[in-house]
Length: 317
Image 1: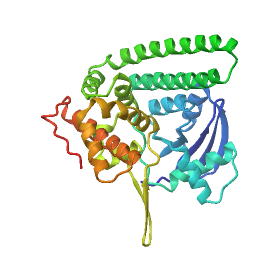
Image 2: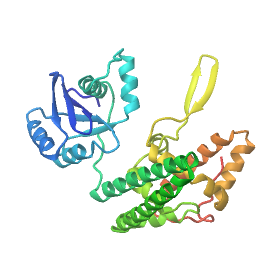
Image 3: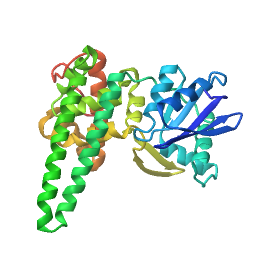
Image 4: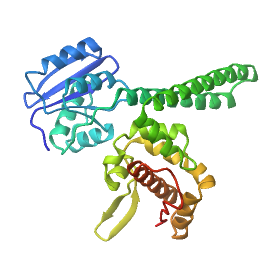
């Protein structure tokens, strides 16, 4: 459906710039619970069909939770899609106010479905996973610093890495506690972890970052995870197909576990060998295996069944 009354919001750490269409009303509020709640109360008169904003890695969480609670349809859009849309309009300038207007116009021009609310438990898991990702990035940076520093500083870096690693272990415990806290997530975790090569963090990412997996068609699921190949054809030219967009966390974790799966999961190894025998390049074969593994996860969750090679003779084609 296309929307007539829509509010675009540009999210930053301290402020939220909004632009209402079709009235072109705009303004700025603080990114605080009190200001957000007052803003949402003021929307009772507007009755927006959608509030849309970019996914910013966390700064939008307060806004999203408040909108869900108020029952207002919302959409966290892919920032790259917004910027591509702005370029298509010739709008190359970038300010918070301009961004809010572009976001609103993007919603009006698309057939968008509102996001489904995430359960508080899944939101907490997502927050812990985000923090875990940040700590891993810090460790990678520190290891880089260690290679290019004086010997006298290496001990300091080693201590910092050790501290970060201990924090990751604590986060893993917290994630685990949240996953097993409910029967639904505990069951999904048991199903996903029964797949050779899939560990607790991978299962947590699928559970928290792709909760609608079982309600999607196969192609929809692949596109949402960012592992669906898109054509690059024009006339008689047939370009190489590429993946793009989607939920980066899901795609990244599935890609990362492929090395383990290729060693410890004979079914995935057989898929990979089949793709390579057909002449597929290494990375193309790996992404194809990622896509197939996601489809297997979907099928297992739908059928509520654990991994069983005899019961699930998944084809390699």
